[in-house]
Image (cartoon, rainbow, N blue to C red):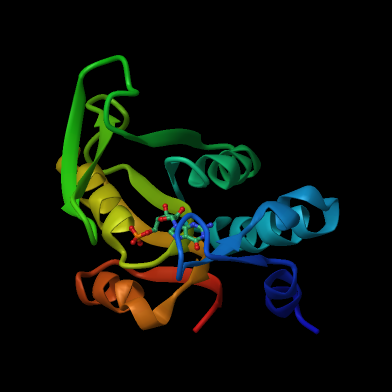
Length: 177
Ligand code: 5GP
C-alpha cells in the first residue's frame, strides 16, 4: 500500500454534514496521527523542494493547517488567503459563485511582490471556486502561481478540470468519486 492509498484510507467520510446529502470528507484523522501527518506533509515538501518557491499560500480555513508546515520545511514564508473581513490591513478581494449565493476571499495587498513564486494549498477541491479565487488574488499582486495543491480532489464536481483548463497545474494526493 503506497502513501497516497494509506492517506486515503485514513480520511473519514461523514454522511449528511453540514447538510443532508453531503458526504463530508474529514481530514482530522490524518492530522491526529503523527504518521499520516508526516506522510502528507512530506509528499508536499518533496514535491516543491526544488520549485524555488518564495511563499506557500493557504486557503482559509483547512489550508491554514497544512500550508505553514510546508512553508516551514521549505524555509519560505506563509501567506493567508482569508474569508472576507478577517485581514486587518489593506486588502485585495475576489468573489465567486457558490451553489446558493457567493463567497469572497481576501489577501493583504503587500502579501507578496511581482514575480514571486507561490504554491496554493487547501484540503479539498470541489467546484474549484476557492482555489481559482486564490489564484486570481495572487496574480493580481503579480505573483506566479506555480501550482495548486490539495489532499483531496472530487473530480465529479469538475473543479480540478476547470482549474487545469484555466492554466493552473494541480497536484492532489487522492480522490473520491
Ligand atoms: P470549492 O471552492 O472547490 O467548491 O470547495 C472547496 C472548499 O470547500 C475547500 O476550502 C474545502 O475546505 C471546502 N470543502 C467542501 N467540501 C468539503 C469536504 O467534503 N471536506 C472538506 N474537508 N472540505 C470541504
